[in-house]
Image (cartoon, rainbow, N blue to C red; front, side, top):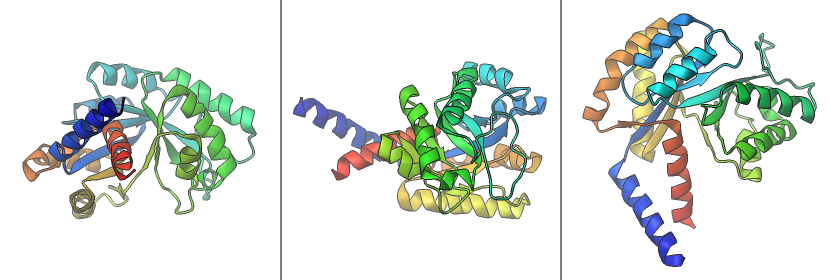
Length: 246
């Protein structure tokens, strides 16, 4: 058994060396508009996070599966700014049963997803108990959690670690400002992080400026020494690295 585990780890480390400087880009807020379906023509292994119970959620998920694109559930969570959350939202006044039932229903509506990340959530993700209730659902379904990190005080990854749910965090928001200069600056920061740490994750949104920018820059990544991968590949990489340290 020890020999087999050793071989698996060796193969994993060899894979890591062969796939240095990996980048994942997640497009959030998918599902409200028919034009979202066109995002599936973006080049490479872009990941997409779908808002539950939205008009084009099902159509997008079906098409994405046919084109081998990785999907996440973009679950709305209560924010500090009080913005409207949309259907399937999780809020501070909900108990365990309510949170788990609402999340379970959203996941059942999108069985194609491999993970979950938070839509807003700067208030809810600070609540350790609520996040543990959420992670209980993800653990049963063998899903990973991507912390969008909308607050520095997020307890999401602590809760995931406590319950043994694979997880990872966002490094860069690509398009808080959608001028080409700012998009390029954020992309450069993403590539710098990937160069220093061998991987990096960006979250972006389906803004026309963002999509036009990505269509232009994504084909160039491989020539620059970066590999665009689904988020799950970086989750896997994280846990191989943790095993190596042990």
